[in-house]
Length: 578
Ligand SMILES: *[C@@H]1O[C@H](CO)[C@@H](O)[C@H](O)[C@H]1NC(C)=O
Ligand SMILES: *[C@@H]1O[C@H](CO)[C@@H](O)[C@H](O)[C@H]1NC(C)=O
Ligand SMILES: *[C@@H]1O[C@H](CO)[C@@H](O)[C@H](O)[C@H]1NC(C)=O
Image 1 (spheres, rainbow, N blue to C red):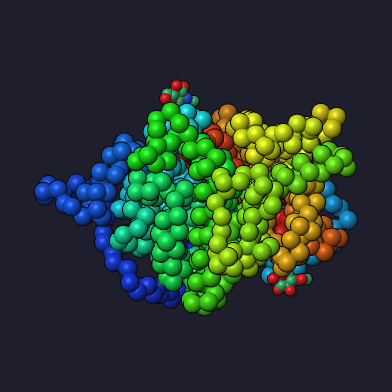
Image 2 (tube, rainbow, N blue to C red):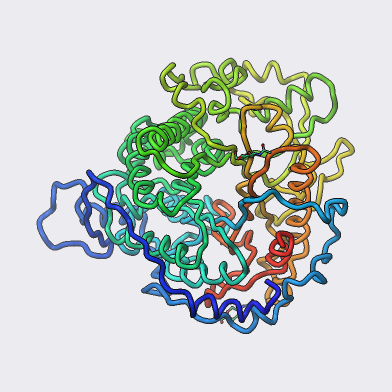
């Protein structure tokens, strides 16, 4: 990347011949062409998978903003602003002091996998196009007041659905060799089960082809929270065991079709989301058949969700290795943060452990005997569903490597009330019964804060090194760890009005530098086998409950004209890997 980016970019799009790609049609699936904009005038069909049924499903979500583009755009040469931006140049590198100057000459292990990540609902837009079914997030963002802080939705966004060729060409021009997108389940199965939607498949065929064409290796997530809405209407989504078969059915279709080009599969993004989503879903949306208005999913939905999610992952992984004999590696991405015990007092140590148990420990079965940690079983009792011996056998060993999305760190502290809390489901701190805060014992914040929409994060790059060591200590059977997400929401970025302010995102650039230095220190000094690191995100996206106003991108997205522009942090990230 020593030459001008503009030059590299135009070469990339002009001289590459299209690669020859072909996709097998998995047997046993029926295909239809859906169109959610086309109600029929024919008599009402009794077919639950009819096009009219899709139209009717969408009517519960309400009107969707139309897309700005209507067809896939061909890549165009980059605007001159890209080459006018600070070039990847050693002089730019010390923008932020390295936190680990002693590692200046230390090299990453060969085959270290790195890139940027994203997810379908957060960047694609085109929410109702080409036969896509609604997902729970279409419903939540449209129909639950206050669920998304700024009332934004995933209707249009950066419209990666139409601009993916440009986005992929840009990644290539910047020097990326890998990209981690997710596939939208309701684009492939508008009802979650039933027929495959041909235009949805054609879309991902084109995405994989575009990646293969420029030599960018995809690490694909099958499920990043966009559960088909129809499965909530049918049985309550992930809180019901029926979802396991439906997910396996979807996963087999995708993996069979694309495995040849996808060396890394993530079945599930962050099953821990059951914590902060399923418990909070309005009961009547979680399960329209049984849910009472005014109630929330609560603790039962939360732990049922976790239960069937891990089982669904394990069933796919078993099939992948034993029947399908896939060539790649498969795992799921955990969400977790580092907890530094406030002291060596027993209550603080217990608190740190319980904070782990209820986040990553909950899903540690692949690295233990396949079961839940004792602390979950004893605290939750009947609220925690039980795995059969056969299910435990499938779960144990179902991950090929450990994937952790690790953004920040906390201090964990215990208290004399914790034990009473563990026996009292009415206690607000139940079931964790373990304190944590993002401040040291002196009360001073652990690090600079992120944007106001992400009150859960401070920049604490030193935490990742301790966390990686801790993971390996907790589960020694882990062969290697990949940091599958890390990133930062620059404070007040959404309030800035000009690119001149936005693009110089010093705090985020500093975060990336410190984080990567600490990953390298973990490999070099602590001998932890870290084999990859993925920055979140490729560009600004829909940040779930925080909406569009909280920005995590390494590229700025202008939501008026949909242009993307790399920020300083993008160059800091790229320079680090040079
Ligand atoms: C979001 O919409 C609600 C009405 O549903 C309104 O009360 C609130 O002010 C809106 N919030 C923002 C940030 O626009
Ligand atoms: C790190 O993990 C990879 C993948 O499991 C393995 O091939 C490699 O040998 C490991 N390296 C070390 C130093 O253990
Ligand atoms: C976003 O795009 C619009 C339309 O091109 C333009 O008027 C506006 O200045 C852009 N915003 C920024 C921050 O560049």
